[in-house]
Length: 140
Image (cartoon, rainbow, N blue to C red):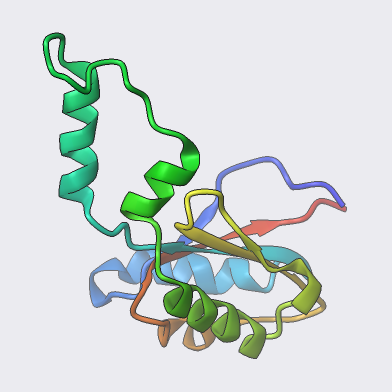
């Protein structure tokens, strides 16, 4: 499988994005093999910004003390229960159970779908931890 070239279709489940919803509805039936990426809300964005400035500011005791991916994930990543809820939501939508992947920062869950057509209504009710969802179509 290879990913199709081009822009991602972003799904914003709010009434203020009517034109985007129409585009999404047309696009959801475009390919039978695709991925959905559920982007999770970052926890503690203020702590991440403070860490950024501390590491970036000469004279600060934290200056140039860069953090590992795991340390950043501990600051902004979702909890295990939130991640499990999102995985279950994707499985309920028809995701391949073997395809579920968590990003290293614990802020996105990706799942593969094959042979399904999803409508806007399938994605409108999402877990609270999901900030937005986008779709990646597989090329032929």
